[in-house]
Image (cartoon, rainbow, N blue to C red; front, side, top):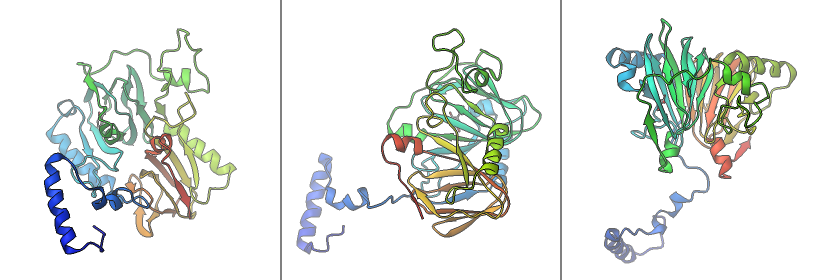
Length: 351
Ligand code: GTQ
């Protein structure tokens, strides 16, 4: 309580009143107003970095003890150290590392929550969305939008690990979670792999209502291959100056509306040329980054953090962030920006 003006007697009478009203489920705003309506974001989320190899060791040990089918999803949650027990990496988003060993499947289910997968290790496992496989290659982005059936399988002879990014805390916040299991390992194959990309991923779409128009209108695409986004970044880097605060940055789009990949999650990639240092920038969307390639340094409110391939870092809301590339530095990032923009909450500021 910040009211230095209260007398001792006033304080003790107020405390007695609070004690009396508590059973009536009433509490005084003036005791908490300053922490509820803050002059700027005041987050319990803390900056943190996970080295992939450290997390991988624990994940492989889990792999010795429980199968993917037993676990339904064999995932280690990247839990923000400032939010212990909350199963989240930021207040609105979840991140985890999922392991599928050779020959394993993660059985088919669907849920309200939207998910992205960003491939960290292995080549050739698949995510099937509504019965269509996306073959997962290193640093591919694969979506399993809310409500769409999905199962995973690894027919290769090597472990496959990807980062799961979901809006679980956002859906929990709204108490709007529904989920169901298909009751089979895999959804029956509906179309061959690549069908959606060829129908919906070429700046074209089947005429609405035609027999070829099979995907949900608001969320057709679900595979953004590394080979395509990396080449696009390279082309941008040869034709444009890097933005002083972002470097070369491309956002993944939903072709249905030109907006974010999913209603609650935005994702983008960045390339910082060797030697390039960004100026500071802060934004209200706490963000998760994966280092795809290169070595570098980040400063989070001037605290340094070294960056190496496959590091995962979380940057809290309204933290001034700078990057320096020691080598060509390529980053993947996701956040709740899409959601904040819909709520008119998103704010960013360049230093
Ligand atoms: O693959 O559907 O990391 O439902 C957490 C919840 C993955 C999944 C997670 C999930 C999934």
